[in-house]
Image (cartoon, rainbow, N blue to C red; front, side):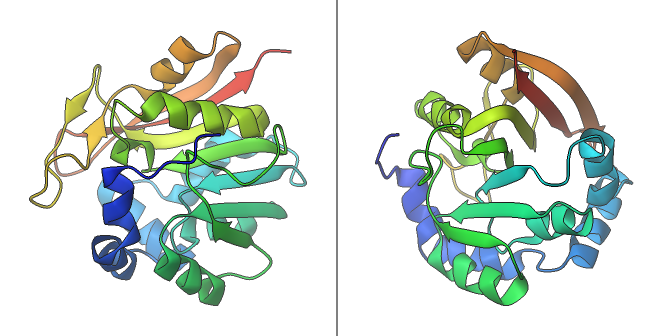
Length: 215
């Protein structure tokens, strides 16, 4: 693990991140409505497509869990052993109000406070996009370290790295092919499934992917 704080983390840990927390979906119904409006498919539908065949007792970690809405979606699907780490302390407080029987604690993609291989599946949703290309491999290595089998993600997609201005700010958002990036760093990862999901109102694309460590 790498104990570090980047300039991006500093933003998300303070008022900039607190404001994002207040804008974020806090319930499963809000989350599914947002996805329906953005992609014409709910988050629950996407999750079922990728995870329906997995044992509901596996240990799952979300890196960057915010207020816990994504974890609530997995809980609603029947998954029982759910964990989250989050760098914004206000989000952690809100998540404790928002969830039950889900363990959400402080931690970052560079410093996951769990032992190697503790989880069966580790995932991100709109988190890798906020990590600088100069730091991304350190984050991927830490996510990889904590998973014994699966890595799952849903992130902005581009064929190669592109920086995107985020709410008037530079240096806070990038998009790329994160599934391919994982595979370029770890030779033992194979792609189980991926799905490119186009936005309803523009040409942007997000990509959901499920990677598995080869036996």
